[in-house]
Length: 193
Image (cartoon, rainbow, N blue to C red; front, top):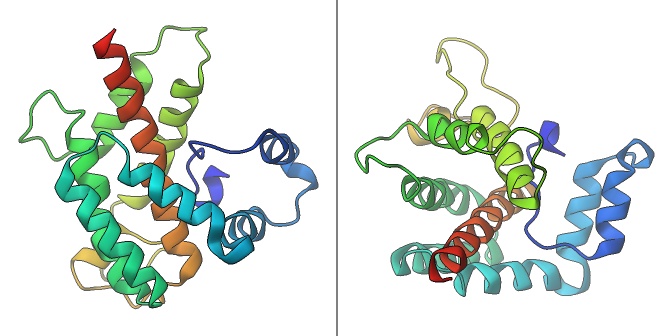
């Protein structure tokens, strides 16, 4: 999944998790995930958006995500993806000890490194997949070279991208935000106990 630009989804039915576990039998993870999110008039996408809206992230990020959902429904994918990058950064910065630190790859790596050796939890695997996702999203780029195949934060936000952003790219970003919201919610619950 990660090699195709997906983070570990926050919530999936058991049958889907089992199918993903058997990824060698899937012809295309992207087709699988696109179908999962778009089936039944985007029911699983809508559920994911509700999950983000009900999460413990900042209200401004919830509002921006809701506006991105509207842009998605209007097929304004470039606008949607560009704004979703801000949501991702806004949520990730909450995990920084230094709120002025903008090194998102270091934030993710620190969380992966802080799990005890041998401990295997869903939260750990979400952070591992997120760390890999962020490394791809933030991959350093030489703007004189070839643009990466997947969305790259630097190319997109610095106005250098000729990348045709499509529905599945936005699905990946919404999925990534939903994964982070699961982490935020879990940490909030742990701090309340």
